Length: 214
Image 1 (cartoon, rainbow, N blue to C red):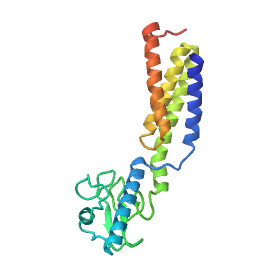
Image 2: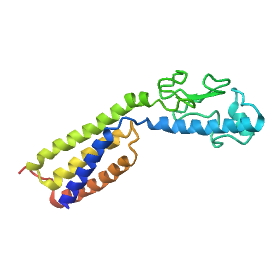
Image 3: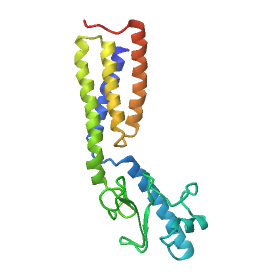
Image 4: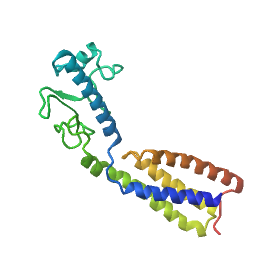
């Protein structure tokens, strides 16, 4: 059991290091917002095909609703992004027949630049990589650092206590790092490992008691 845990922790650490080298990750709400923009843009295009014109900027979602083309009819009011702010819809647009975009996380209308998410440029990968991925990578690295640092205590405390605790630190770093970047299934794996290692530690501490220095 001891060697299995050591192997799992080692493989997971190697995988996290490989993941952390990839800087092309967007902010999760930004990805979801862009997906909503694409769906809403498709509904607007359908409306134009059906009626030969684009819906007017004022109350455009009401026109889509009356035409049974509203993207998410369960939502009331104007369609909004994942930060609960209405999308900006302009006709005619500067980048096409119509411009549809979100003002992004900061809520400032940058006309599709900075952290804005638009139907013509999508998610600004460069902006989110610099402003969010750096935080997530630092948090993951912090978990790796404390995890590896704790392994040095293996000469002082028993292996059954040191290795799982190191794994817990690494997993927590990954989970907190996932607040800024969508690590995807590595976050799920770290959550599962966190539970497994916590149970393992709890059972052993109840059985053997808190370890003492050798």
